Image (cartoon, rainbow, N blue to C red):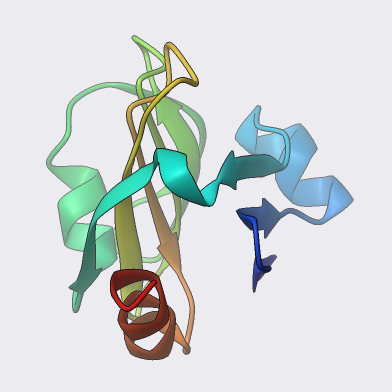
Length: 113
């Protein structure tokens, strides 16, 4: 999994196995549709507390899944900080939480645009 920030979009690119087991595809959001950016220090804990999910779930280790309502996507792993952001104009998706070692730097860049 890679998180890529370009001049016009934020993209979460999943490996093939992550797409299959997580029941997800790549996520690409135009920057004007990204808001409420936060760094989450323990993203696995947050993913575990959001109710029923579909996809790959290994409690306390790894989540590549969406909520049953399909409004939240989680691509998180233990020990790696998370980048959380709200999404507009991509219904039903409202929020994405993705683990990346660059979460703080990406959040700073997104907030500074």
